[in-house]
Image (cartoon, rainbow, N blue to C red; front, top):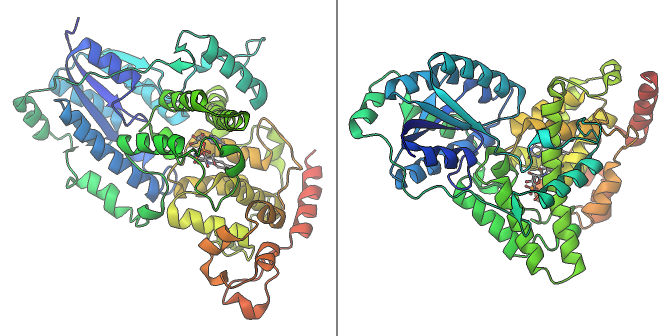
Length: 493
Ligand SMILES: Cc1cc2nc3c(=O)[nH]c(=O)nc-3n(C[C@H](O)[C@H](O)[C@H](O)COP(=O)(O)OP(=O)(O)OC[C@H]3O[C@@H](n4cnc5c(N)ncnc54)[C@H](O)[C@@H]3O)c2cc1C
């Protein structure tokens, strides 16, 4: 029976549909309002977020507010320390229950523990749910009841659990439908919040939202392939399926000049779409596939969704990953950390075209193709001999989809310091360019000063001075650097 007055706290679930916590809250609450807290610890442009991600967040919140209003209630956006604000809000509106979906990052787990302590003392009922992963991490264990450390066996178990569990019927996972009408608070109660010191913002004009949208100066949203908001995320999924992108994923996903991947990473990270909706999209595509090739492509895409869950599981089970390498011997690696090389890398001025094209894509659009993320990460670590954590941080400060678990996982994979190590996995940037950008289209797009250079020269990086037009000479020799890397690596074994 609906008898409680409740708050639903949005965090990494910026959507109304298929939101497990919100669905449960709406089932049990007589009055329900939503809240989002702009937590300064998660909005630190020097550490935890990027201008592009703040833009994605702000636009998604504005849409979410409209969606709450359309259903008859409100989403309040508060600015400050959630530990204080959530309990203050609960007190102000005399909320009896607070609902939220759990997060998996160490900072958030710790913060939530403090909030739970505080709210429990205030006799407020707290209801939390697992929403951001298809399978609860506590259900994915090896036969020895240990967490998986290797992706392959993890993936097989993950698929087996989904297929055999109650959550799915014909491989489709049940979706939670949030009711069309949510009864919120009356005008008097809302104005009491407005008149309080809760720093409450409601519109695009509000200071906090405005700060996110303007002070971050992310001007290139038109170049960013990830589109904010719940409705755009669903459109992106539908486009990927209906345009056949998912059916040709196997062939096209590694070609950075093509728009051939789903672009759903920011949506999945901030929760403007649910992981279940995305899984179902893949299953529906499988039902419509015409041949083995298409089925294989869809399976490859599903494996990428599983990589996301693998890294989130890794962070939950091994929170120390946030601070450093999984393999401790890497703490002894004698990084050379030359800051002028790092500056050249981050600014796309290394003189190695595929590296610079990728870094300029990141700088300009807030996003980088997965193949290029692997190439530039390998280059930073194994050619420039710079600590991968520098690169990890730079990615968090630049990516629209920056996500601690996936970013850390990607960097530790590239550095070979993670769970699944292959230290001699070294990418040759010239070979990578020849294989995945054979016509030089990607390089030419992001390094316009090199458009006139012949494709073989672009790919080999052998560009004569007269054709460089200010483009730098390579800052290193790949062969020399990787042999230094190998020597240094043998010193820590
Ligand atoms: C060094 C490095 C850093 C990375 N940092 C991030 C990050 O901060 N945030 C992030 O979401 N992804 C990160 N990735 C993974 C991957 O590059 C992006 O998820 C992908 O490029 C996003 O494009 P898409 O949405 O079109 O992906 P698609 O190819 O369409 O894949 C579908 C979804 O699967 C997930 N996914 C795909 N590949 C991976 C992967 N290798 N690891 C984890 N999840 C994956 C994403 O949620 C993605 O949206 C990183 C990879 C590397 C090598």
